[in-house]
Image (cartoon, rainbow, N blue to C red; front, side, top):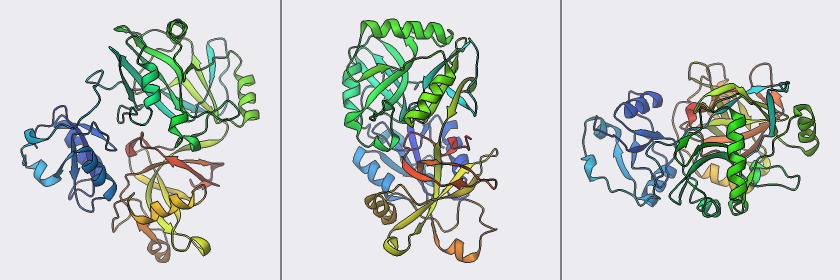
Length: 397
């Protein structure tokens, strides 16, 4: 395979003789940084069969070079000829990664814990270097700069640092609403951690010292649309307030916890009031009655412990008519003949009713609970997650 050192690469379509995960692993071995979605920083779109329109159109819009998997595997098309797209200056060559929280059903208690609201938006690591602001998604896959220019502008006056927080659109209760994230011009950046400051790495410090440094930094700079996430000492009281206000939940953090990039740790814990998480779309079905000519529901899946997609139900509520028509129009998906999930137990008529698609799109769905057979109870669509990779999607509760 050609040398892809330093290239940002997206894969689309079916790769003959390879699973998507294996193909992406081979790209990483060749030095590539594999992204799930095309951004203006993407260098290369690697295609297989049944290529979807969405990624091809995005590649054309950003001037991203497109190459067939077989040609790339054989070292062809002279990768040195790739035209570099016009991109925002990167603050570092290596994207920062976010520390992730485990999931608990009860609030951990004790003097060693502090508590925050669980914000419902896009996790974001903001990197400021010599006045250049880069807004990374939690795994470094996406830049949010074009989507949130006001946040970028607000942070440009900050000293060199890396901030961890959530891009949110606040609602009337003082909480945040993922369903409002399309109103990006109204977004705020809620900051809850400080990873680096003027070249000093703070990740090895305990949370309470990082928080002190963050508060000191914020006292000197109070940019518009940027706020500190409030911190509380009584988790039960905060959880009750979150219930009263209809918020998603709270986060508990140990004062002694160091910052472990990319790890899901028990020293941070999400306590959710309502269930909501991301799912992979593997197919869709036409609706009935009024919706008989458009999308009625999306077929959902999560990865099991072996990395295999397993069916967990369908979501048919929470969509606008426009969203249904977009999904039914075919621009969001690359279709496939065989499902990406095991449907051997399905009746033939049920299998035939589904339009199967490549497992490339991740969506956020709220639901009341999981059923005993691993399906969603009363799910509702919230939005598309372009900041999450398909292989990251696991059952969380």
